[in-house]
Image (cartoon, rainbow, N blue to C red; front, top):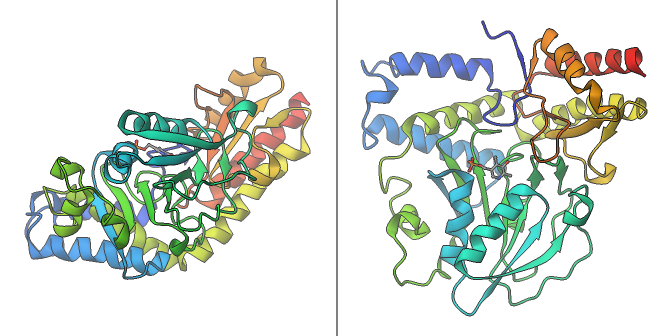
Length: 360
Ligand SMILES: *Cc1c(COP(=O)(O)O)cnc(C)c1O
């Protein structure tokens, strides 16, 4: 029985009908007489699945034809390394904005490959805000940002204007949660396990002219975007199951009314929780600066941290799971991804309110 309210930060909640369809496909894919897990990745059946995933993603995000869509492995974290390996050629510098743990891990990887300039950082105030005014040198190989900071609970609401510098974004925790203009970006990537499916596949959206910047010498093929583009994500055996889950999640999003409708719901869900936190400031201390608040991951602490275990117990009693904060900032984090039903958010809001009234 799936009877929990799942606030896990990732892997995260999936839509019920998607789970049902995946379960059926594991037993038998359509009328093939085979399990989804038994088919060849070169079969017409899988060709249809990966094409479906690509088409739906293109439709949902309005991705123009001059962007390639790739389904890669290794998680978002392999992208931290592949990006500089492919685009940070000798004699160049890459720009990074440090807005949290994932951003700084991306920076660490790039520093192993080449020269990095941190053009802005919010580390000094414990990543409570998104840096605003900063300058972007025009000779950067690219500028890397993290559109939603899963651990600290901040989100970019206005993306930097980078002129001719290619803008690359890690959207692992907010892809498909709000409308964005893909054409502001040279590349977008996202591990699927938060808003777009299950672990094992990473979505990569990459503008074709960026590929021309890749120096031709000695990149291992698996780490070379061009190899994956040429092979249309079938350079090696792709994660067939994870791609199937993504195709079904994308179909579910379309059936819900697409990204604008999910954005409306996500705003509604987030505002229910923020409203309670803001009404009981003597109990709760939200982490993010109000103008940079994430609608995907809501982070807060109790002013009296001795009550942490009590609140966790209240949540557990209400069937709420996954709201303990990341060990690096402590406190609590409620992740409200696309597939989390409004009902679950209402339950959490009620618990937070009742808790504040009892201990306030
Ligand atoms: C979860 C997360 C990652 C790590 O993703 P993996 O797929 O586990 O490598 C990277 N960036 C952000 C913003 C994340 O939320």
